[in-house]
Amino acid sequence: MSIRPLPIFSTEQALFDGLSRRDERAYSFLYAETYPSFRYWVLTNSGSEMDAEDAFQKGLMSFLLNLETGQYQLQTGTRITTVVFEYCKRVWLTELKSARLQKRAVMPDTIDSIDTMDVAKDMERMEVVNAVRQSLGQLKDECRKLIEWFYVDDLSLREIAERLGMKESSVKSKRYDCAEKLKAFYQQTATKLGL
Image (cartoon, rainbow, N blue to C red; front, side):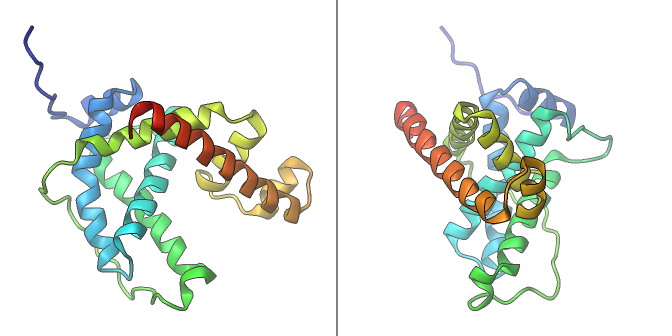
Protein backbone atom coordinates (compact mmCIF):
# COMPACT_ATOMS: atom_id res chain seq x y z
CA MET A 1 0.00 0.00 0.00
CA SER A 2 1.58 3.27 -1.06
CA ILE A 3 1.26 6.50 0.92
CA ARG A 4 -0.43 9.25 -1.05
CA PRO A 5 1.45 12.54 -0.98
CA LEU A 6 -0.28 15.62 0.44
CA PRO A 7 -2.09 17.33 -2.43
CA ILE A 8 -0.92 20.70 -3.58
CA PHE A 9 -3.94 22.92 -3.97
CA SER A 10 -2.68 24.61 -7.11
CA THR A 11 -5.87 26.55 -7.83
CA GLU A 12 -8.15 28.56 -5.57
CA GLN A 13 -11.11 26.48 -6.80
CA ALA A 14 -9.35 23.26 -5.72
CA LEU A 15 -8.71 24.72 -2.26
CA PHE A 16 -12.28 26.04 -2.01
CA ASP A 17 -13.67 22.63 -3.02
CA GLY A 18 -11.41 20.90 -0.48
CA LEU A 19 -12.55 23.20 2.31
CA SER A 20 -16.19 22.76 1.29
CA ARG A 21 -15.74 18.97 1.53
CA ARG A 22 -14.10 19.44 4.97
CA ASP A 23 -10.94 17.83 3.64
CA GLU A 24 -8.37 17.85 6.48
CA ARG A 25 -5.60 18.30 3.93
CA ALA A 26 -7.21 21.54 2.73
CA TYR A 27 -7.39 22.79 6.33
CA SER A 28 -3.74 21.88 6.85
CA PHE A 29 -2.72 23.57 3.63
CA LEU A 30 -4.65 26.75 4.54
CA TYR A 31 -3.11 26.85 8.02
CA ALA A 32 0.42 26.31 6.75
CA GLU A 33 0.04 28.94 4.04
CA THR A 34 -1.59 31.63 6.22
CA TYR A 35 -0.60 31.35 9.89
CA PRO A 36 3.14 32.14 9.66
CA SER A 37 2.60 35.52 7.98
CA PHE A 38 -0.35 36.35 10.27
CA ARG A 39 1.74 35.47 13.33
CA TYR A 40 4.49 37.80 12.10
CA TRP A 41 1.94 40.57 11.49
CA VAL A 42 0.47 40.28 15.03
CA LEU A 43 3.94 40.25 16.61
CA THR A 44 4.76 43.49 14.77
CA ASN A 45 1.41 45.05 15.79
CA SER A 46 1.54 44.94 19.61
CA GLY A 47 0.69 41.25 19.97
CA SER A 48 2.20 38.12 21.48
CA GLU A 49 2.44 34.53 20.25
CA MET A 50 -0.70 33.66 22.21
CA ASP A 51 -2.53 36.69 20.78
CA ALA A 52 -1.63 35.52 17.28
CA GLU A 53 -2.88 31.98 17.94
CA ASP A 54 -6.14 33.18 19.50
CA ALA A 55 -6.89 35.73 16.79
CA PHE A 56 -6.01 33.23 14.06
CA GLN A 57 -8.29 30.54 15.47
CA LYS A 58 -11.20 33.01 15.86
CA GLY A 59 -10.71 34.45 12.38
CA LEU A 60 -10.36 31.04 10.78
CA MET A 61 -13.46 29.77 12.57
CA SER A 62 -15.42 32.80 11.31
CA PHE A 63 -14.21 32.18 7.76
CA LEU A 64 -15.04 28.46 7.84
CA LEU A 65 -18.50 29.11 9.28
CA ASN A 66 -19.17 31.67 6.55
CA LEU A 67 -17.95 29.21 3.92
CA GLU A 68 -20.14 26.46 5.33
CA THR A 69 -23.26 28.65 5.52
CA GLY A 70 -22.71 29.98 1.99
CA GLN A 71 -22.02 33.55 3.16
CA TYR A 72 -18.54 33.28 1.63
CA GLN A 73 -18.40 32.49 -2.07
CA LEU A 74 -15.18 32.16 -4.03
CA GLN A 75 -14.66 35.10 -6.38
CA THR A 76 -12.44 35.10 -9.43
CA GLY A 77 -9.04 36.63 -8.75
CA THR A 78 -9.35 36.28 -4.96
CA ARG A 79 -6.86 34.26 -2.95
CA ILE A 80 -8.44 32.34 -0.08
CA THR A 81 -5.29 32.75 2.03
CA THR A 82 -5.61 36.53 1.68
CA VAL A 83 -9.29 36.40 2.66
CA VAL A 84 -8.49 34.30 5.76
CA PHE A 85 -5.65 36.68 6.66
CA GLU A 86 -8.15 39.58 6.50
CA TYR A 87 -10.66 37.74 8.73
CA CYS A 88 -7.92 37.12 11.30
CA LYS A 89 -6.57 40.66 11.00
CA ARG A 90 -10.04 42.04 11.73
CA VAL A 91 -10.20 39.93 14.91
CA TRP A 92 -6.86 41.28 16.13
CA LEU A 93 -7.73 44.90 15.32
CA THR A 94 -10.97 44.50 17.28
CA GLU A 95 -8.95 43.13 20.19
CA LEU A 96 -6.57 46.09 20.02
CA LYS A 97 -9.52 48.49 20.19
CA SER A 98 -11.10 46.70 23.15
CA ALA A 99 -10.81 48.14 26.62
CA ARG A 100 -9.06 44.97 27.76
CA LEU A 101 -5.96 45.78 25.74
CA GLN A 102 -6.03 49.59 25.44
CA LYS A 103 -3.61 50.08 28.31
CA ARG A 104 -0.91 47.77 27.00
CA ALA A 105 -1.27 48.04 23.24
CA VAL A 106 -1.06 50.93 20.85
CA MET A 107 -3.21 50.83 17.73
CA PRO A 108 -0.91 50.79 14.70
CA ASP A 109 -1.03 53.92 12.53
CA THR A 110 -0.82 51.96 9.31
CA ILE A 111 -1.55 48.38 8.47
CA ASP A 112 0.52 46.80 5.76
CA SER A 113 -0.73 43.77 3.92
CA ILE A 114 1.83 41.00 3.99
CA ASP A 115 2.01 38.29 1.38
CA THR A 116 2.09 34.79 2.72
CA MET A 117 5.66 33.85 3.57
CA ASP A 118 7.16 30.49 2.78
CA VAL A 119 7.72 29.12 6.29
CA ALA A 120 8.00 25.56 7.56
CA LYS A 121 4.61 23.83 7.58
CA ASP A 122 2.78 23.06 10.81
CA MET A 123 0.12 20.70 9.47
CA GLU A 124 -1.31 19.19 12.63
CA ARG A 125 -2.65 22.55 13.91
CA MET A 126 -5.59 22.36 11.51
CA GLU A 127 -6.92 19.46 13.57
CA VAL A 128 -7.84 22.15 16.09
CA VAL A 129 -10.20 23.71 13.55
CA ASN A 130 -11.92 20.38 13.03
CA ALA A 131 -12.29 19.94 16.81
CA VAL A 132 -13.85 23.42 17.09
CA ARG A 133 -16.31 22.61 14.28
CA GLN A 134 -17.33 19.35 15.96
CA SER A 135 -17.72 21.16 19.29
CA LEU A 136 -19.86 23.89 17.75
CA GLY A 137 -22.15 21.21 16.34
CA GLN A 138 -22.75 19.87 19.87
CA LEU A 139 -24.16 23.18 21.15
CA LYS A 140 -27.92 23.66 21.40
CA ASP A 141 -29.39 25.75 18.59
CA GLU A 142 -29.78 28.99 20.58
CA CYS A 143 -26.21 28.80 21.89
CA ARG A 144 -24.79 28.02 18.46
CA LYS A 145 -26.69 30.94 16.92
CA LEU A 146 -25.53 33.30 19.66
CA ILE A 147 -21.88 32.28 19.16
CA GLU A 148 -22.18 32.62 15.36
CA TRP A 149 -23.97 36.00 15.58
CA PHE A 150 -21.34 37.38 17.94
CA TYR A 151 -18.14 35.92 16.46
CA VAL A 152 -19.03 35.42 12.79
CA ASP A 153 -21.61 38.08 11.99
CA ASP A 154 -20.05 40.65 14.37
CA LEU A 155 -23.43 41.56 15.87
CA SER A 156 -23.38 43.60 19.08
CA LEU A 157 -24.80 42.21 22.31
CA ARG A 158 -27.64 44.73 21.94
CA GLU A 159 -28.53 43.43 18.46
CA ILE A 160 -28.43 39.83 19.69
CA ALA A 161 -30.61 40.77 22.68
CA GLU A 162 -33.20 42.23 20.28
CA ARG A 163 -33.17 39.05 18.17
CA LEU A 164 -33.60 36.82 21.22
CA GLY A 165 -36.04 39.12 23.05
CA MET A 166 -33.71 39.32 26.07
CA LYS A 167 -31.96 42.03 28.09
CA GLU A 168 -28.44 42.91 26.95
CA SER A 169 -27.02 41.91 30.36
CA SER A 170 -28.72 38.51 30.06
CA VAL A 171 -27.25 38.01 26.58
CA LYS A 172 -23.79 38.89 27.89
CA SER A 173 -24.17 36.24 30.60
CA LYS A 174 -25.60 33.69 28.12
CA ARG A 175 -22.76 34.33 25.67
CA TYR A 176 -20.28 33.59 28.46
CA ASP A 177 -22.16 30.38 29.37
CA CYS A 178 -22.32 29.29 25.73
CA ALA A 179 -18.61 30.00 25.26
CA GLU A 180 -17.84 27.92 28.37
CA LYS A 181 -19.97 25.05 27.01
CA LEU A 182 -18.16 25.30 23.68
CA LYS A 183 -14.83 25.22 25.51
CA ALA A 184 -15.89 22.11 27.48
CA PHE A 185 -17.08 20.33 24.29
CA TYR A 186 -13.82 21.34 22.62
CA GLN A 187 -11.73 19.89 25.45
CA GLN A 188 -13.62 16.58 25.24
CA THR A 189 -13.25 16.48 21.46
CA ALA A 190 -9.57 17.46 21.59
CA THR A 191 -8.89 14.72 24.15
CA LYS A 192 -10.60 12.12 21.92
CA LEU A 193 -8.55 13.29 18.94
CA GLY A 194 -5.34 13.33 20.98
CA LEU A 195 -4.70 17.04 20.51
